[in-house]
Length: 140
Image 1 (tube, one colour):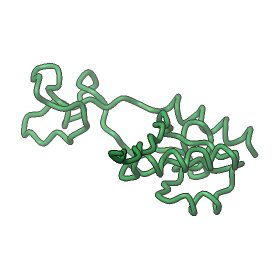
Image 2: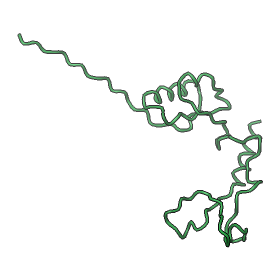
Image 3: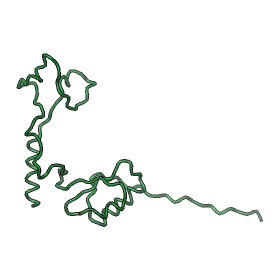
Image 4: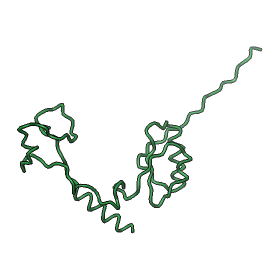
C-alpha cells in the first residue's frame, strides 16, 4: 500500500502545472496567484497556446491520495496535546495550529516525538525561563 501511495504522489507531482496570472510580468504589484482572465479580447481567455494554460479537469490528484502531504502522510491540524493521542503515527502527520503559543508548542513537539508522530511545521523550542525570586534582605 505504501509503495502505491508513493507512486501516486510522484505521478501527482509530475502532473502539476504552474498557472500564471495574466499580465503578471507587466505589473509588479500583482500577486502570483491564479485569477481567471475575464477580458473581452483576452488571448489567455480564448485559449491561445502561448498565453498560458488554465486550471482544468485533469490537473487534480488521484482520489486515493487527495489531501495527502508530499511526504506521504495524511495531514491533520492539532491545537492541544490531548489531540496527539488519537493520531495514528504510521499514516498521519500533524501540523500544529498557528494560534498555539510557544510553551504549548514545545510541549506538543516533545509529546509528538515520544509518540513517534511527524510534525510538519516544527519550530525551535524556546527554553522556559523560571522567574528569579530574590530573598528579601532584612536589616539587622
